[in-house]
Length: 136
Image (cartoon, rainbow, N blue to C red; front, side, top):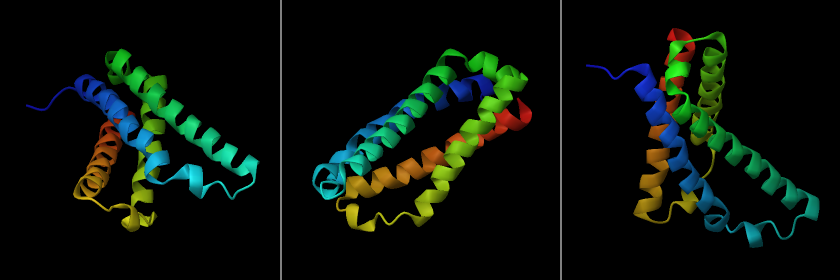
């Protein structure tokens, strides 16, 4: 028996919080402090601002999904628009997995496993929210 859309959206909401763990490691694993030091101040400030907006979006997706899974699954126009936007957000991010040059940073088995796990999570989010956008 397939889980209900509401249950899938709730679980997808929780997945967003897991993604934040990986996001928190990025500035350290990529050594932003040293790597961005040669940039003008405005440029490295923009990295942090853009990163902050992405993190805030992921938090919002998670909170909205966990606290409103039933309403989102009910399929109102707003719920379907939300699902469509989240689906597109993760579809773009999944597409970036194919073009980002990360190989030099996957220096341990757990980093490689984490990278591939994130790819699976992104695909899962695309499928869940895509289903919500189309069939909500």
